[in-house]
Image (cartoon, rainbow, N blue to C red; front, side):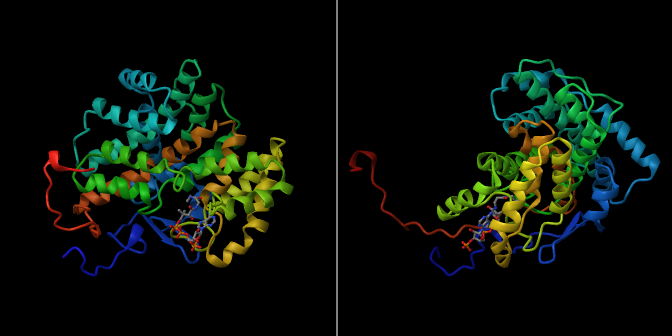
Length: 381
Ligand SMILES: CC(C)(COP(=O)(O)OP(=O)(O)OC[C@H]1O[C@@H](n2cnc3c(N)ncnc32)[C@H](O)[C@@H]1OP(=O)(O)O)[C@@H](O)C(=O)NCCC(=O)NCCS
């Protein structure tokens, strides 16, 4: 019966949908593990490439294993001409829409596109991880009327992205900061975009479909779009002394301060620590300490009372200032998150396929029942 009492779990809050060996989050104490390893150890000691290996194969690589993965990633950085043609056609769109479209287009050129086996899905995940930065960088250059820059096999994943975007080899410390950012974004349980990827995979749709769904879902400001929104806010504030009035105006309208709050973390997001410190040092090094001062005003002053409600900074709060200081255009902030998350989406899809079940929840119908049908000529409007 439509009106029967049902237990609604709006937003699937607190609902476990499956088991996973990829990551563990304790939102109460702000703890995050990838495959059992603490995010702090990984952020301090690992490259993104090592974390890709860890997530996809379940263990940290030896030097030989890492070298093999590195070689495969580098071999797969270039895009087929057809994918570049697609990027040219849709170049006016938001970079996330271009990324989503290019990921879809790449399925046409991937010989294993329809292969749902674990091995093929991991291989495709590695290819998409390698291709995503090239898509984003090539698109940014094309829309600016510039020629795409070919990938540089002498550079690691993060450094090569900055090189393809800006056409010059980045400062190694800048490249390492982006590398750490990728490490921090690589996997995060069944968040909205990973859930979307799993829903696609739950129908036995292939990895390109699942990653396209993930990219689509990540675009929104309540998920991946927050870093861009934070930097927009900080630029509008421009001076720490104006931050309070700005925030009070925002909050009194019932709006949220972007970069704060999280569905799972009710303590500080452990990923924020690394980006906070790098935002500070990078701001000082590049002669722009003002952005960090404004961010600190929000965190330690204006939003401090919200901690009692479990609202702390999340990973996106300091990320925007880092991308900005790296000279990355604002609308590439979410695509950078997506680039880092491709391995996470891949591992979630591999897990979904390994014991697949159709993800199909229910809606409680609250509309009218058994309405008498009226033929079109007798309808009164
Ligand atoms: C991430 C987010 C969507 C999580 O939402 P959620 O789990 O559904 O939490 P809720 O929307 O139920 O929020 C709980 C309460 O905290 C408030 N709140 C949550 N985030 C807030 C924020 N950033 N600023 C101000 N208040 C916030 C809500 O208004 C709500 O208040 P209420 O109980 O008085 O109605 C939410 O915190 C948000 O919109 N944050 C800003 C966007 C962002 O930074 N996203 C990136 C996430 S990594």
